[in-house]
Amino acid sequence: MVWSSPNPERTIAVAMRRCYSTKVIEDIEAELEQKGTEYWKYLLTKCLQDKSLDVLEHFTMTLLVEGAGESEVGNLVRSFPYLRFTPLANSDWLLSLNARTLVELWKFGDGKQFAESIISELDAKNVSPLFNSLAFGEGIRAS
Amino acid sequence: MERGYVRVKLLYNTDLGALKEVMDRKGVAFDPSLVMDHVVYMFEIEDCSRVTTHQLVRHRAASYDQESQRFSAATREGVVTPPHIQSNSTALETYNQALKDVYAAYEKLVAAGVPKEDARYVLPNGIKTKIVMTISARSLMHIIWQRTALQAQWEIRELARTLQGLAAQATPELWTTVIER
Image (cartoon, rainbow over all chains, first blue to last red):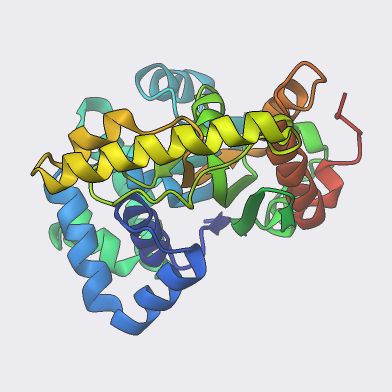
C-alpha cells in the first residue's frame, strides 16, 4: 500500500449523501461526523445491497506491485481496464484503482486472487476495515 | 475557493510524497508524467448550473455523484443568471419572468401530487446544482486544456480555472507547465 483516500468509509458516505441532500458539503461532513460510524455503515450497506457501486469510485488507492510479469499485468488490464498500471523497474509496478474496481475484480473471474491480495493489504494496514468487512465478508481474512 | 459564481472545495488529493518515496526506493527518477494517472483529486463543486455539469460529465474519465432532483425540491433562488442577462435590464426582466412562471408551474405540479422527479421536467437548465468529482491529474489536465479555451462557455471556463488553481496549490510539481490557453 502506497497511499489511499483518507477516511474511506466517510468519503463514500459523503458521495452518497451528495446525491440525496441539498446541504453544502461542510454541513454534510458535519452531519456524518455527528451521526458517526453506525450511520456510515448503514449507508455503505445500502449502496452495496442496491449495487449503487458508483459511490465507491471516490475511495481510491495506490499500491506497489512487485514481481508481476508483463503478460500477467496485460491479462488483468484487458479484463479490468480501470486498473492503472505504470511500470517502475524490472517487474515492479505502480497500480492505482478505486474501490468499485476492487469489488468487481473480486467478484468476477480471473481477478479474484489478485483482489484478495489487495484486500489483505488493506486489512494489514487497517485502511478500510468497515468497508472490507461489508464488501468482502469476514471470510476473506481467513483465506 | 470561490471565483464568481462557482464554489469549489478540494476534499482530498493523493499524497505525491508517498508516490515519490516509493519511486525513489525503486531507483526510478521522479517524472510527473509517470504519476499523472496515479494522483487523484476529489472535488466538491457547488452553485454551478446544470448547463455546466452537463458539459463537465462529458469528460467520462472521472467519477461523479450529483445532487438529485428526484428527491429534493427546487427553489427559484437556486438559479444561475448568466452575465449577458444580468447586465441587460430587458433580458433580465424576461429571464426573471420566465423563472417565475416556471417555478409557479413546478409548485403547482408538486401540489397536484406529481412526484418531484416528474415535476422537474419543467425546471430550467440554469438551476444550480452540487456535484462531487474524483479525477486523475491526467484527466483533469485534459478538462482544463479543453475548457479554458476561449470558445468554451464562461461558466465552465470559470470552473476549469478554479479546479486548476486548487490542484496546482495541492500538487505544484505536477502543474509547472501553464496549460491554460
